[in-house]
Length: 153
Image (cartoon, rainbow, N blue to C red; front, side):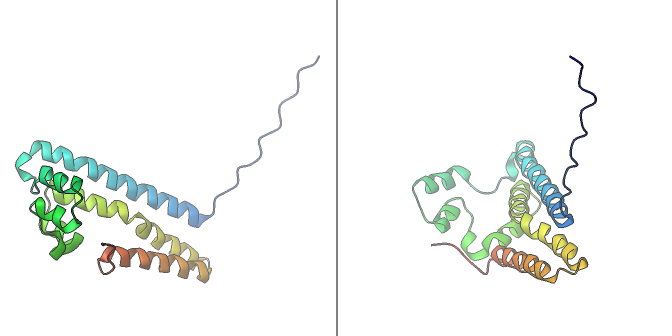
């Protein structure tokens, strides 16, 4: 029994569309940046324990007692209701809590940052329908993050 000659070459892998590659690359980069920033915040709290502003045990106590969100924040000494998320980030500054909040915001906004260059790829290809759709979705993400639309009960 003779050995098979060289096996046939594998079929070429299909190439992903440029818009998908751009979306994936930006999503990965922004997600990694958000993860690294989120990992840096607890490390900074270990190095500078006095930099932690909210009273976390009181916040968790209010959370487990099923208090409304405004009371949970108030229990920790933070008046979130008047400032909103972006005001809270601004007031926390460059401390560990501000870095953690900014990392959360960056991680939640991955879609926004990935859709903008994806829309540009579609626009350059003259695929205006998908470019407009990408920009509309990016706009909805920005609107949801702006604080103008609230989902609290």
